[in-house]
Length: 374
Ligand SMILES: *Cc1c(COP(=O)(O)O)cnc(C)c1O
Image 1 (cartoon, rainbow, N blue to C red):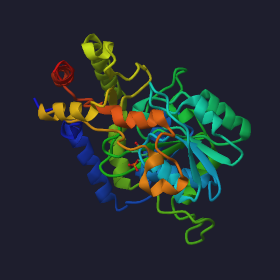
Image 2 (cartoon, protein in one colour; image 1 turned 180 degrees about the vertical axis):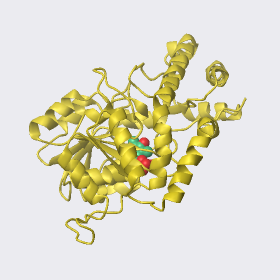
Image 3 (spheres, rainbow, N blue to C red; image 1 turned 120 degrees about the vertical axis):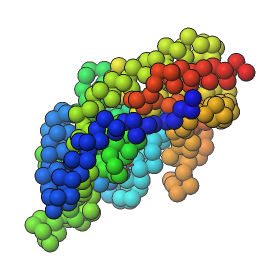
C-alpha cells in the first residue's frame, strides 16, 4: 500500500463538526484579530504546557524573531545555535543583524553537542538557541549552566517538540528563558495555516512580546518600540483550541509507532551490522519525525528504493545552516562541523503520523529491510 508522511484528512475527520462550529463562531463574531479566541488559546496552551505565560504569534518563525527582539538581540551580538535545523532558527538571528555562532551536533541525537555549544558562549554572546529537533529535548546542561553564569538568555526552539519532556520530566516550555512553538500544519499540533507561540515564565518578557507583536504600540497609535505584525488570527486560535485537548493522544500514538519502528528495525540485519542507525529511544520525545541514518553513502538510493514501493520519505535537512549560500559571509567552510554535515548526508525521515496504521509501518520496515538485503 502507498504510505505518505502524514494523513491530515484522517487526522481531522473526527473533529470536523467541532472545527466547523469553531470557525462559524468566529465568522459570526465580527472579531477577527486580538480577541477572546486568541486569549483563550493562550491560556489553554499555558495550562497544558506548564508555562506561566503564552503569547500567540503569527508563526514559529515570528516567535523566534519576536523573542530575540524582546531579548534585545541586535547588531554585533552573537547567538549560539545548531547547524542542523530549519532555516527559520538562523534567519531570526541574521535578520536582527546578529551573528550566528554554530556548535556541532551530537552524533546520536542530532541535537546540539552540549560541550561544544557551551564552549561557544563567549563575551559577545547575547542568546543561545537549542533546537529540540524531531521532537526530542536537547540535553544541554553545560550550555544552560554557562548561559546562566553569564546572564545569557536561552531561547528553546520547540517548533518540533510541543509536549516533549526532558529526563527530569520538565516540559520544553520550562527549560529556558522562553520557548517557541510552531503550528505549521506538519507540526505535532498543526493549524490551518501559519501560527506560533512563545512560552515564558518571565512576565516582563511576555509583556514586551505582546507589545512587539502589535507594532510596539501602547496605547494604540503611540509606538514606543518598532515591532511588527506578529499576531495570530482569531480563526486560527479557535481551530487550534479545538485540537489542543487531543494532543496527548496524538503524542502517545507517535510514541507507540516510534517504539514499533525501533523493535522491528532492531530485529532486522542492517542495524546490527551498522549500515542503518536508529534514533536512540527517549520516553519524553514526541517524534515529530522518525529519522534514521543510512550509512555508507546509501541514503538517496534507499530513498529511491522506498519511493519505488510507494513509500514517501523526507530529508531533514539536505544542507546544514552554516553552508547555506546566503550565510557565506559568515565564513564557515565544509568540514568545519563534520557531525552535522554527515547527518545531512545520512538522515532519512520515515513516515510517522498518529493515524498511521500498523500495517503501513510494517510495509515501511519491510521495504527498508529489502533495500539492505538487495
Ligand atoms: C517549523 C520550524 C520553525 C518555523 O516555524 P514556522 O511556523 O513554519 O514559521 C522554526 N524552527 C524549527 C526547528 C522548525 O521545525
